[in-house]
Image 1 (cartoon, rainbow, N blue to C red):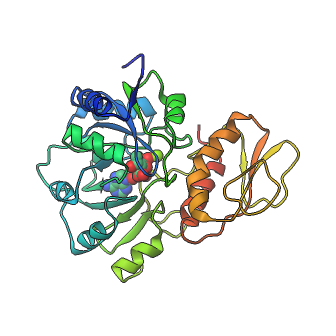
Image 2: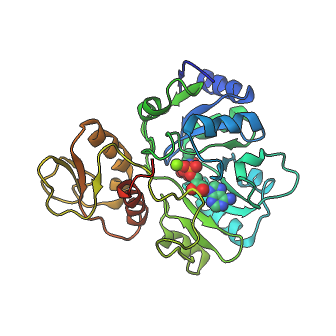
Image 3: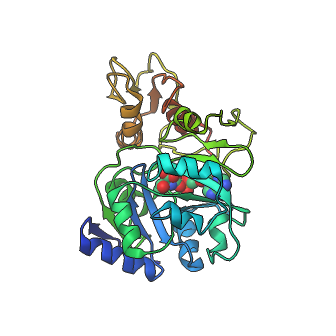
Length: 316
Ligand code: TXA
Ligand code: MG
């Protein structure tokens, strides 16, 4: 276990150091266009085990493998017509595909939590791409936050949660999309496993068919979709029009509030601001955090999904 965490610059030297640490079995956090990921060599069982240790993540929760190209993804999973169509339009980008795992990939079994499927993604962020290129192999990377806490969209957020537990963080500034990738299951009929930074509507338009969607609870979702997640220190109330005294108020659209996700009621802007706002409100140590209603369309699905989990009764 590492005792000091290096902050690496987004430079050629920084990428080379990151790649060396990964090749050595170390953990490196790096920005993607969605959130910061905590990367490990996906072939190295010990390195992948350390991801679970550093995050306090339950072992039954599988990881997304990040690769440089769709061709690299095809080496790991059994490809399909739908996968090809989605990859052509949306990769690199905030979309993760879950497909049957190929035999003989040599990936650590911890990556899939022994499921017969694997989640793969080709990120678009230039720093993520540079780290993947320098390392030259698949990188397993969950969001770089302690399990159950708010996801990180800056290097500072990562350091706050994981400093001293990982070897390095590559600082690439703030993430553009701000919520995690959309996860689509493609073993069987295409289904939405997690709403995210790419709207379900955009995916349905390309597939020319509706995605089967998890109802709300109980229906099939990604195994890591624990009820309580993204939890700030203070209790969270949703769909609030009028906050209580002592509550910090997170607004959406023109209104009086402590912070505003998007004064112009733009869902893309709100997604980009979501986790940073929760981090900032949390740092004010309010008695509670009240959140204005967010429309349930486009990126609103991902925002409301994260907010429901932030507001859910805590399990720890
Ligand atoms: O945007 C993202 O997806 C970020 C960046 C770093 O790429 N990563 C991320 O990873 O959000 P994580 O571990 O926080 O969330 C991955 C989700 C979990 O809910 C996990 O259960 C699900 O993906 N998942 C992984 N493998 C799966 C599989 N084979 N079948 C179904 N769900 C899977
Ligand atoms: Mg996560």
